[in-house]
Amino acid sequence: MPVRLTFHGAARTVTGSCYLLETEQARVLIDCGMFQGSKTERELNYRPFPFEPSSLSGVLLTHAHIDHAGLLPKLVKHGFKGRIHCTAATADLCGIMLPDSGNIQEMEVEQLNRRRVKRGEEEVEPIYTQEDAVAALAQFEGHAFEQWISPAPGIRARFWNAGHLLGSASIEVEVEQSGQKPLRLLFSGDLGPDNKMLHFDPEAPTNFDFVICESTYGGRDRFERSEDGRREILAREVTAAAKKKGALLIPSFAVERTQELVTDLVKLMDEGKVPEASIFIDSPLASKATAIFVRHAGELQNGSDLTRAFTSPHVRLTESVEDSKALARFSGFRIIVSASGMCEAGRIRHHLKNHLWQPSTTVLLAGFQAEGSLGRILEDGAKTVTIMGETVSVKAAIRRIEDYSGHADGPELVQWVKERLPVGRSVFLTHGEEEGQHALAGDLGSLGLPHDCIIIPSLDSVYELSGESCAYLAADTKPRIDPAMVARLDSHNDLADLVLDIRDAVNRAGDEKAKGVILRRLRRALSSGETGGDGTRRRPPVSGPSRRSRGWEE
Image 1 (cartoon, helix red, strand yellow):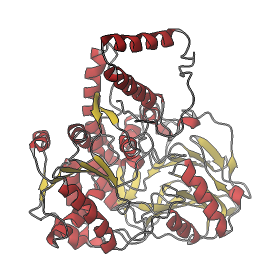
Image 2 (cartoon, one colour; image 1 turned 180 degrees about the horizontal axis):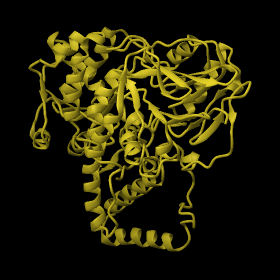
Image 3 (cartoon, helix red, strand yellow; image 1 turned 90 degrees about the vertical axis):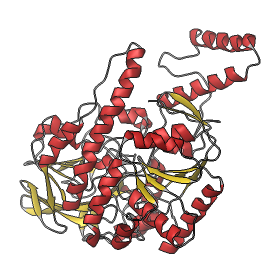
């Protein structure tokens, strides 16, 4: 059997990282991440894996973020018995992140089922439970950077610092080939920027046959600033929010982004560059993660600053649900840092529901927002959203800061690939949306890589790696969802948007008679064939966000 590589996730989207490497002797999975974004993509989390978990020899994990590790408990639950290999710090972080993910799923499914029962629909089950996640942790095995391991017969691998997250790694893989040199591959994982607060720059060897490179910010130059420049930008946002005398909500990934932001917020307050205020960290996961970061502070740049920040009297941790709910009763300027970073789950959704309608509120988005996520919908200028079944008007100021991104930008990605040269066969671009990927492909052409050897795989596509030149498609495969719906707003978003439009139109009607006219016209439209048999509405196509909002419906 030739060596094959199948892209079961992070293909023309930034979530669900999952790559299957197959040889005659072994099947190794690189990452097993959860899909986020539109409901169409998130439903993939509930479907069976496109491979048999029990057939896998082992798993190599780049880092602990849920879009890379989030389906590992499901993998174990459905029959995987092998080892999950990662760095020691990644194993520590997964020890808190995966049980937290299971707990969130249990709570959200419980809320969803209450609504489904009221609608007369069948109840659903969580993808996995907190107990499932704890069970999966027994199969983790932590390793040092740059140490060769053998995750499966005929395959060896080692981890290199990726500069993205505590413990994050690029993974070098060598595959034995009978009578030939080993096939050399490098999976970038998520790469950190050059000016990351807590991490040294990414490292890895050179001279690979294949490089699988992330492309989150392909084609974008963020013109990264110094540490002082980064804090100056943050200070401007905090000062503007303070003048409104309301809440500053910062949706933040609980692991690392929260630690970075709080470290800088405390430093700015101590230096008198922003008004003093209480900084509420409303995320039990963030509290646990901070303890791990403090334990690994000696491995981090600016680790001592982080340790000092979390002993500041400005910082207050909320553990219980009651403590979290109590934050809604506070007044005046205060800062609430809460997960999740894309507003997909967790306590931030409650804070958004309670505060988005208030003009005194500021929401500061401090990371990449995937297409279809609530964070992206807010970023795109929605005027009304639906959160947990409730319609909420958006009166808050929605702001964005890019300087805390955990990802390298376009020029840094090009430089990282350049430092890996020569690449003998192909570069695969993954973990990005198509526009950025095509831009990065064009930029990589300047390195002398043949254009037809820079490949942008689609979901579930499989490539032969054993030939003499570039990788090529091994067979036509049927993707689990329509490729056109990957990293796109879907019918669930459109339906929520339509419902909001109808509500607005009815509310603007002058009296009951006018409202009745609108509703009768809608009913006639539904019954007269204006809705196609395939479920699509017969209306002119709309590109990008709608004229007024993109709703969000669970």
